[in-house]
Amino acid sequence: SNMGNNLFYQGRYSDARKMYEEAIRLGRKDRRIWGNLADSYRYSGEHKMQAKEVYRQAITLSRKELLKNPKNASVHSSLGLYLSKLGQHNQALQETELALRLEPNNLTIIYNALLVFEISGKRNRALQTLDDYIERHGAIAIFSKDPDLSKLRNDLRYKKRLGKTGKADQNK
Image (cartoon, rainbow, N blue to C red; front, side, top):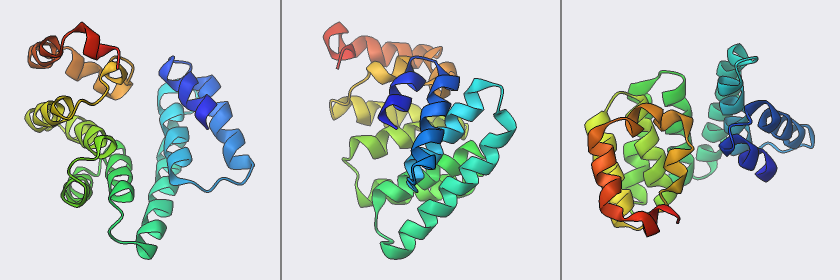
């Protein structure tokens, strides 16, 4: 799975897909691996149609986890992200807002929220969340590699915010 993540952020989506598939074949029933596999399908081009079904599996696993612990902010955050990638924006926003209420300072949750807001067409809210992320000293190097942020990266308001952080911070 970690190997898949490295390959994914290098833009090697087909190679990442193979790593995620292997992790699942080895018995990993982790929502995050299924979500990552769906992302690799979505961006590899060759398996785009399979992405929706794999996101549904990640959603199912997330909901099962929430039955055990309904206050798990990390799971609500992941669930919101998977829902947004399926176009279920209202539910995605609800899950994301809940995750942020439960753990407002968790950088992973803030990052996922930024993604959900951007994917859901809430650019102003995405930029506010970016401000929160930067204020909490989150690593911003990942922004240049995340394909879901490609349109946001072209926004002058985004460029202005990143310009404020200084070049040293961009290497975090």
